[in-house]
Image (tube, rainbow, N blue to C red):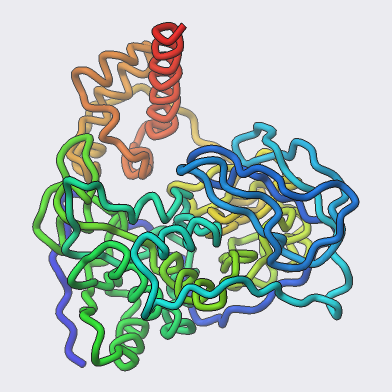
Length: 450
């Protein structure tokens, strides 16, 4: 098949992909940890509410926490076992949230609990969205936004195109690549659900040009009755950002402060789509996800289907790490976060784990003053002025960053930090500034309500 590659967005960068060691590794099933740690907040919104009690035996896939309102999703047991404790559990952000400690039974006794199927042929859009929420499905690309909420179209809007995001431009990560090569039937079933739920007339599967094998395979497996096209996009970071992808594929611009639905589009991660297609026909909840575990410190690098709630320490011990393990990132090197502890669990939003040795992290270059070279302006995909934003952040002039330089348009891709010759951690400073602004806004809302 002769594929044409779409032109890309302006600016951006080309970091080393570092995908060769895992992109050809098939997905392997991961064992159960001796104790699973299951946060009830693995998504944007409100935590789920427990429906089990300490000492209770549960079956793999059983509902253990129900959604608490619209912007919340259900949680399911990742293994058959005993609820040992309901308490607060550690998270990637360093905070403690409500959670469940589950001790699994031996692997030989594990059976999956089946629920009420949601047949795509007969289900209404409302029933599909409800089933997605009850299945606990969130954006598996890392954002963790509840998928049913993302797919619900406001009454005054409509969606004509759904973009299935298989770009996976983050270095090291090959999770979506393997899902496209191994779960084509699930992806296409998931697309049927998504098209029906949104009322969209068509779907586009977007794949970066360095994954042509996935495009070839999905093209060969494409059902004749499904209005789906497959588009290759240029290899560039951060090509997978939804606003950029909509611009490249549809030649439409998402308005500042707006969402793709404002221009009649929706963007959903390809692994999320596959989970919809895998779970809804069986009435199951999400209990596991595919994670890339890689990096210089990892001995058995690859893609693993890992039960939700698996402690990071157990995951790394299972794949093996070098003795000089120094730093662990959850996510990729551009947008991931350093793990504050190895006791935090794999969650629905964990797309990758990248472990480094002291050789890579032992020498941190000093931070120098901005030299106004303009490299960050050339890199920024949103055409912001990271240099000026960085200077304002250093002076803690956070409101000016928002009012005069459009800080909230930044999605913290890290391209500016990557190219900065002065090694200024621009993206991290922007994250701090946005957190400060959001905290102030929340305080204003509370004071007005009281």
